[in-house]
Length: 268
Image 1: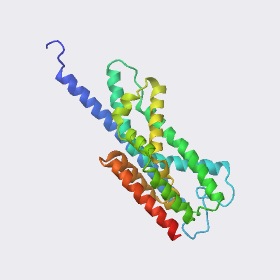
Image 2: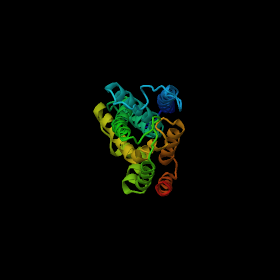
Image 3: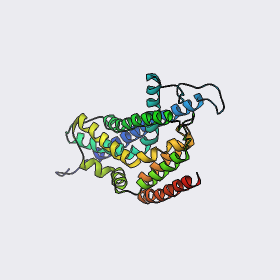
Image 4: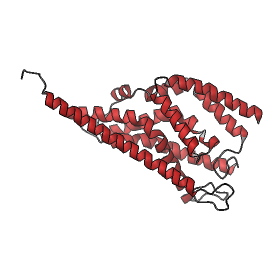
């Protein structure tokens, strides 16, 4: 073998290792996502039927929340965000895993991909805390039904207008650009070590949050526990981030949301 030549068998083994690792990580992400959706489905079964007399601890309560009530709501929101956002973060997580293993092959420190993913989910945990507080405030103001749906046309219309206008802002598209370019993000923001991987994941989570936070507020319009509505928003976010026409989807949807919100305000 000449100097500098690579053993084809070693190259094939390396490629096979990368494929297996990617498959394992992808299967893990799919499994976590499935568990989150099953959890949400179980909550919808536990919620009282429309017109029912009983209320569960997971439904918004007329009485003040206890610490347990608030904790359960926070868990619900965080699980919902994981189920909705993890699929759209999969390309970034898989890119991190690939580059991380290549760095390990060159003798650089190796960090479990789960650390990067944990940083990403930590960002959405912060959003879940804010969403829980917002839900509590809306309930106190009698703007949410017992099934966590807006009872105010002004609130619903206002949220649609806000979400639509935000879709057209430079901040939205700057965040969307980072979310749509996993390779560039990883290369330009690489940090070594477990702390660095956690920070990278958090940074990506914050970009993702900056991309989607107003759209997530629309959950209060269609119903926080309306799984069809939750799934529709999750699919919309996925399309924005992964489809080639994602930026056009963001702009056109912004116009549509704004128009629909104005219609609701006028009709109301």
